[in-house]
Amino acid sequence: MKRAQSITVRLGFVFMFLLLLVTVLGLENLRSLSDANHVSAQIRDRWLPSTRALGDLNNFTTDFPAADGAASRAHSAAERAVAERQIEYLNRNIALAQRAYQSISHDARESDLDARFEAAWRDYRRLVATRRAANGGALNDTAGDRASDESALAYDRASKILSTLTDRNVESVRRARDLADSAYQQARQRILLAILLAVLLIAGATVHVMRSISAPLVDLASRMHRLASNEVDIEVMGTARRDEIGEMARAVVVFRNNAVDLAENRHALAQQAEILQKKLDEEQQLTLLQRNFVAMVSHEFRTPLALIDGHAQRLIAMQDRLTVLELAQRAGKVREAVHRMTELIDSLIGSARLIDAELSYRPESMDLLPLVREACQVQRELTPEVTIVEEFEGAPVQVQGDASLLSQLMDNLLSNAAKYTRADALIRVTIAREESTIAIAVEDNGIGIPGQDQSRVFQRYYRGSNTSDIVGSGVGLHIVQTIAELHSGTIEFDSVEGKGSRFAVRLPLRRWDAAASAVSA
Image (cartoon, rainbow, N blue to C red; front, side, top):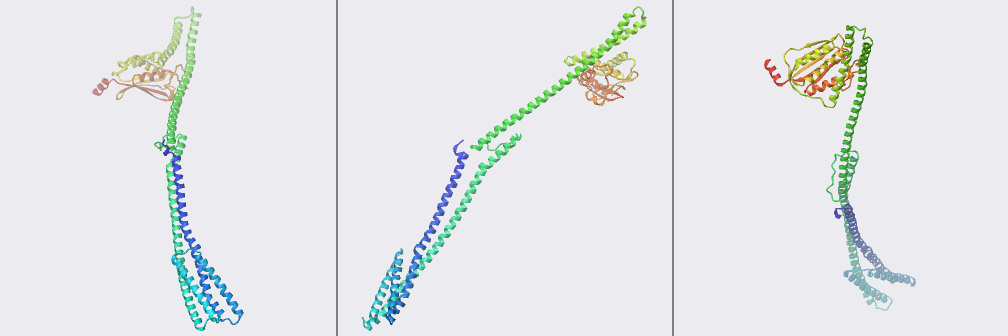
């Protein structure tokens, strides 16, 4: 960062500029005031004393002839003495006024007029003295009259000179007053201009500071507050600046990037925690289901084993008294118990194979109708008390599938239908062709599935809340769903508690079979 671009340096320049501005404007104002004061001082120190001295000279010289006349007309010594004192007083004050005027600096013209007045006044005084001597008898009447006339002319001459000097002084005072007024107006204008210039420059400096320093700082503070509120999608301005604000902006960018990384890490951790929690919940649910399954299977194995053990004990105890018919009946009971155990073992093995992903899928082209018929016949033999009705035509239904798995699928659907229906109930098996699929439906009028259990009906080890007194492992429908998905098919159901259920499996037809069906149609 260059030193010249530092905010401290820039502010120093601004303050130095303002200080220099105040100094220059102050000096200029002082100069303006000094000019006005100089003119005022001339009026005060020169023209006003000159006017006062000339005024005194005019007054005293004007009174002098009257005093001189009074002395000339005096009839007594006392009157003459009073007149003489008045003349002495006027002479003294005229001399003082002259000295006061002469003590002030004047130009050559004024000095010349003053010298001429002084000479004229001396002539007048001399002629007055001559006239007074004539009146006292020292001169004859002709000399006295001539002295009186000459003194009058000298007085007039001195008065005219004094009047000219006074008029010149008055004119000079007027010019000095006009000059003083002009100096005052100029000083006033300069001061007002200096104030306006200072206001403009200070306003410019203030705007510069606000735009280049204050506003960016306020903007950075606002963006940092937004970052503190976890608002990370903001743009930071001023990163290209090469001063302290630029350093702050770049620091805010780093803070924002760290906040973004932190938010992403927090989100990733939250996702991982959610996944782990979901897996934990699944494991807990699976553990619970497995625990329930083990308890259920233990109960289900215990019942047929108890039957087998009971009939075996009866056979041993009554081996000499049993007829062939009774022996066959008890052997049939033992077979039924063994069949129940075999069914449970097959369910357990199928479930274990599904869990371990060991289910073998070997598809081949096959006709689905014989497989369904065979499954229905096997179920009739296992549950002769239930009526199974086949509702489908005899035309071949070619699919690409694994015969063993599809047989297991039908066995599970039919055994569930027989298990959860009444002894004299009807089970309907239908096969229907659709556009590109074949739908196999198994419908019963048994106990149905409660509404709160229907969302979990295909879940492994899960059994409905109304099946506690019916043998089962809870894996049959899960196996059916898995086999259907292996064949790229689907399974769906409709069920009403207390009225029965209908399960439909849809499998894709072979392409050539679908094309043949379309041609035959």
